Length: 539
Image (cartoon, rainbow, N blue to C red; front, top):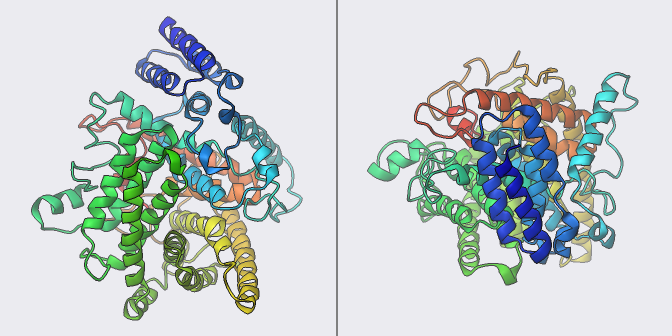
């Protein structure tokens, strides 16, 4: 660690302890990260020492809100600097891609937690020691590999949605890890306000990806509304670090998509049903995440955007459930398990956002259909076979549905008879989703090598140029989605093997990102960049 690093750490400690300030320590931390990322000569041992010093920042000297779990929405943005310091310490030796890759799973877990009722025991729980908990889980997983497992059943009570007392597998501060990479990328850019090439291809109007930019400029060519999906990552990062610039970029990306909306709620792009499904789910999730931030601290521009999002999400969802549209989508998606969960989750999210219980109940049939498409061995059918990439994508959406759509199946304002029926449906759906996730994650773990490499043998769609993606290139293995899927279900099931496999996959993906840190144009490759190379979720 250089002297300038020590100086910044000293200043961070003093300002945080003396003033209880969140802004100045955060700025100093950002400067520290810039220095750390630009110091190429720093050895691994020095980086490790830097990480240890960062993780030792005086949490106890910060405002009391930073030491609380923050389940009440008023604490949603109360603790960025202190927790970010710990997160940065854990991520200092990793590439930026690792942090962003954790992004969606972490933000979704935080969202699911805020959209469920927190008990007093949860409010008393200190959620800021994920690092130590992860180390214990990884140690247990490594030890488990050396002996025969005693049971493959899920750990009782370890699920956030199943238990009001145990949330040990849902890290509440992980959302800050998710945003670490984005903020580092912003700080490393010469012009922080120039987002035209951050993590992909977003122009000044918000068009994301080359396809959409060309269409935006010329009005010609193929474009895909699914590419606007990535606005969520900017919004989640902005919320985590109280970075209004990042939030506005995410909103701009979504706004470009909203501007393409037809009068009937559809879009004029190819493969519109599938493509719009990704956008609908993402936009609803982003608006829900924004809506959880404290109203008193929520700027007017955010409240305006949420109202806009509610209107457009309602229009898109209404188009999705039109009988003639539903018939086409149901038929076309019959051989793709992940699409059943995508559509079900999109409708469920839209129902929660717009307070439309009919949409939530319409989503159930898609989930039930997807549950029927799993082989007894655990793989989910994709084009009449298995595919580890799509296995991951399907499991991600299944987990999202389980975590915070399924709890909304039961609504208090229903009649007594409807209430009883909804309780039974909710219990059935959640129990079947748990078994689906257990089998699916267990199968996916078998496809992960000791070095984190995915075994694509027998894949029907990815890894061997079986299909071509939107960018005209063969579809690559979706390592990021496999990581998300295993991480999600390791939290839900309390499964240390899935947890270990997830981080092995992420480690292998990180090494690949590190090997191609910058492309020929000098663009920082920080996780989202891989989506332009064939690993987009919209496959």
